[in-house]
Image 1 (cartoon, helix red, strand yellow):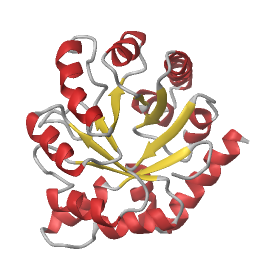
Image 2 (tube, helix red, strand yellow):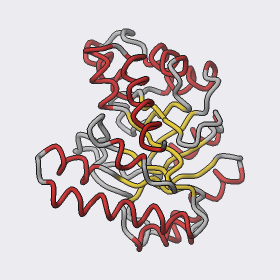
Image 3 (tube, helix red, strand yellow):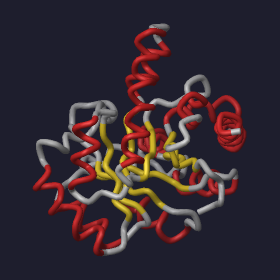
Length: 248
């Protein structure tokens, strides 16, 4: 980890999406991860989905071998994914909801209804030395449930705020931003480390980055998309600069 107050995790899933569209080896998500690392990313995020629609098992193998920054391994709460995580023991494991029919992760994990199951699921991961994060909506019930089951980190889903902002629905987006602010502070008050991710762009990053309780932003789709136009390193550098401006 770096000594920056606010960390940037770069999600490389959609480099693999482009690769898989042609069924070959190019572009390489491992190369993207290395470029991101060189550009100042504090960590790399990769979601190994059950259907393997983008990141592959071989990608995880390669990332574990080559990265010198932490890997945040996103996964569903399944026996298969738990076994893979326990084999690799990545720095962090982020438990996310997953549906085969969704295009991307559509919301936060329903922790409050599955407390007992999730508590037992994450226990071996914590014992193996992985930092366990739970991807949730900015909702008090979910924050409290994540704390009760023993998660060290909550990652708050910023998609509603970012989508409403992009649609020009400013009053509604401001309400979602306030919800993120309140739950960031509340999670921190419970002793949880607070991260935020999903849908963040150059236009939406600064209000979130300004929350003093937030320790990490995980951003992927926008950075990979912007890299098509300006390159991966400049896209990461610009996002990093906006984050730092917000904190300054």
